[in-house]
Amino acid sequence: MESTGKVQTLDSSWSLPLPLKEYAMSRVTVYFYSDRWVPIKFCFLEKAILLHHKANLEGKEILLFPADLDPNEFSTSFN
Image (cartoon, rainbow, N blue to C red; front, side, top):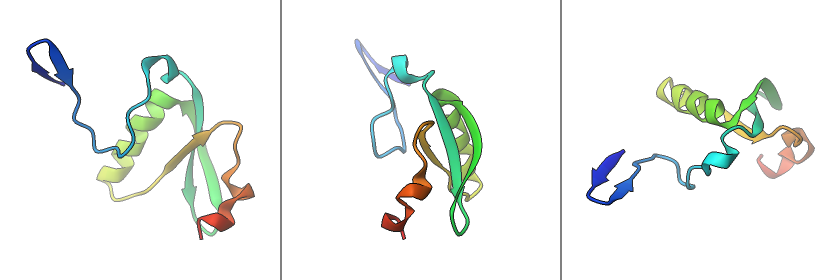
């Protein structure tokens, strides 16, 4: 974080705003795509965001979905 007097800003590569703190412990599923969406891990949103950043640094793409949502049910809209 960069402090500018009374106002603090956060530089982020995310195109959407980062989630509010009360959602950091929300459970999500981390997926990657290989002919279909494959779940690789259930974790809290805060950890999933860190995993997403690490994957991007290695040139990999993973996506996060709410734990109760299966992207395979609507994957035709992604292809």
